[in-house]
Image (tube, each protein chain N blue to C red):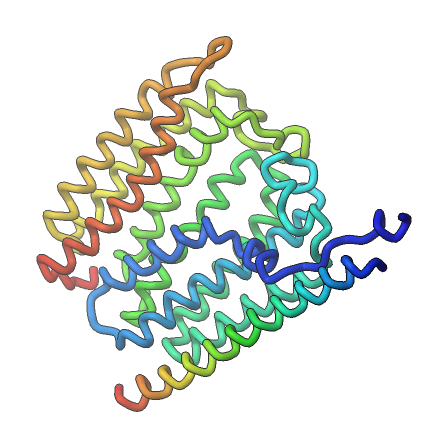
Amino acid sequence: MTPDEQDAIKRARRGRNRALALVLLGLVVLFYAIAWAKIAG
Amino acid sequence: MESARSFSPPSEWRDYYALTKPRVMSLVVFTGLCGLLAAPGHINPVLGFTAVLCIALGAGGAGALNQWWEADLDARMKRTAQRPLPQGRMRTTDARDFGIALAVGSVAIMGLAVNWLSAAVLAISILYYAVVYTIWLKPRTPQNIVIGGGAGAFPPLIGWIAVTGHVTLMPVLLFAIIFMWTPPHFWALALFVQSDYAKAGIPMMPVVAGERSTRRQILVYAIILLVVSVAPWWIGGAGAIYGVAALALSAVFVALCVPVALRRTAESDKMKPEKRLFAYSLLYLFALFAALVVDHVVLGQGIAA
């Protein structure tokens, strides 16, 4: 594998990890908001 | 040199995003939201948002499963050959697992946060699209578009049930409207886009039944659509604002279908009537559902017919 290809793999992995972090963070916020809505309702 | 040739670029988050068919999702979100807003009763805005999110995620999961199953087919057609799986940017099992995760996750969140009836209908809609349509019927019958339309017709039904918690005639009529709208919408496109469905072995209506029959069926569905679209007004589920809008919008739809039904493709045909019908069909659906929501907000028509 060439250095360029290794870079491409690292870049893609970093991007996927960031997207996954955002999704998880979004779920945390969503569940928190749902819990409040359920308690209030 | 050899390693460079066998190197396939790793999948990026954009590839996963593409698996969810984002353009289809915009229509799903819109009609789901309209079903939710037009339903009688009240839903907490956070839970309403969650319901629409789950509808979108469920549709995304079904889209991913569809692309997982049809990877070979997509590779043979120009329109779909650029998708992540035919391009080899992603492992097929990853696409399958991603689709299943979205489907299961969306149904679970819908059930826990909103209600289990809307979660059950969401699960049915995903299974319907991914299994009944994609795996079973699409490769087997030229009525595949009619059947596939059923999958696209679920969102307003689910949005409505998210609010009311039960199924009545009104949300079923919303389902029927999209069900009847899909064939003329898609076949208009199929008439003017030189598709390679035939090459890929999918029995699309214009290929199997011929162009004349397809054109005639477009008009038949448009006439049924006119009746179904006005029905919410007749049964008292929607008010005059919706009724008049539905009548006017559907009358134009039928009027645009007439020239499509009566003509035949000539040599080097520009296919103007078909293109006009396709463009209008998109506008039609957005305008019709927007009218339903406006009617509900302005007239406060909250009869759960």
